[in-house]
Image 1 (spheres, one colour):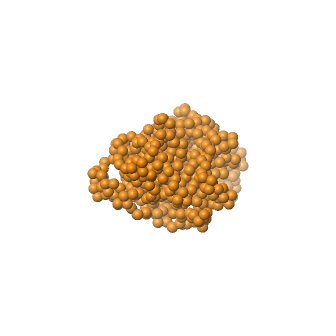
Image 2: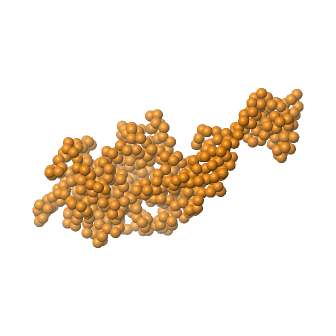
Image 3: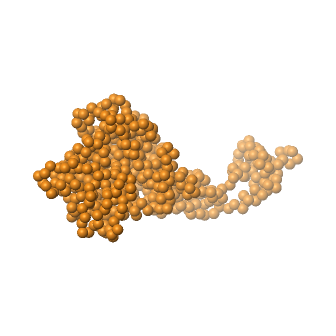
Length: 590
């Protein structure tokens, strides 16, 4: 269950006073891995004044005033250093006077100091090009730009385009990072040369705040589940809103429902029944009811009231919930389709639903062509539909509808379900919608939209097989006959010469795969979901999949004796399996 947006809304929704959190985007910070040639030595425990006081006493300069004269310091500074050394029993007073001499312990310390010699070292370190400072980013947490773009991440701008030079890297900054990240007692004295070895990107979350009245936008960055003030300041300094082409415009008018449903929606708003955000803060509360309709406790993405409003930050979570939990049917209508939404993860999760015999229908299209959609996204969905009888993917002649139907839940909205990311204009709108969870109403809408799809729909690309949708079959067999009532579950599939019949799977059970060899996937299709499930995953990717925080995953790994450092750490397939099992068996409230 994915509650990512709601979690960020709860934690950081008020981080920008006067502004509302309107979007959470996957983003990537530009990072350069540099190799620094430095003059370094073993880090010394003694402060510099105490070190040289010991050295001078060993050399025969034994009075504090004489030591102060040699160092060019006020005598009080030397007296303070001498007092510390006396307390550590490195020095003692000769005959109880002001003359200092070394103790055996102090003599050993001086010999160790004399043996410490500076050496030339080459040290790799990360340089954050957004904040333009050295950073503690492990190299395994960084990804290539191609991978960031393929995952639909927003690539954040660098502070400047110049090369990283000696003026940008200081010994003090180097020592601060070395002290915090390594156990090696190394101190950098001087930096001789800095050379860039490769350019990489750090996955983060970009928080977009806005004010619809003034069209003002502000950005923030979450690194390892924590808001980074340094990156927020850097985004403001680099005018990232303008560089990324971000805009906030008034949203389209909310689609109105029938008068009866609108009145129920108004009753919920006036009565103040729990919304998505309050339910996140009080999970497990008793279910409310309106007109005798109750909330399904297994579908935590959809809240208690049978007709309620859906705010802007809920839409992405509702889509993610549908991909993870739908059991019988899924219908999505969106004018445009973008690659930033139809990612490999999206396709893999959708294919999991198809393997569980969920009837999936996706319709898109507005205008005479697909110039508002991405060709690669359309091709991926078309390839998937060619492999599954229970997946219908069509283009409509012209639709402004933005519909999501998942089992007995219907969301009617102005939110573009399949193109809310990846718009080159990068325009945000405070989209609002309505969620209806009255079964007979949802069934009527499902039949209506299936009829519209049957009337307007045409294949997207490639040969289309016999559709498994019962409504579509009936309409083809009897063109003039009225459309039958579409059942919520998938009908028995039709056998074909090239495909064995798959038995319907009861809700909650694992689908039974056919015994025969599966048909090879067409070129350009997505990998098998089993392969995706068994691959390595980063902590933040697995957290998004399981609907938990990265901190919870890191803590669970550490409890099992598996060391995990950060949200960008890569987990081996065996560890991913353990983590999934841990959270699958965890009881609510634990």
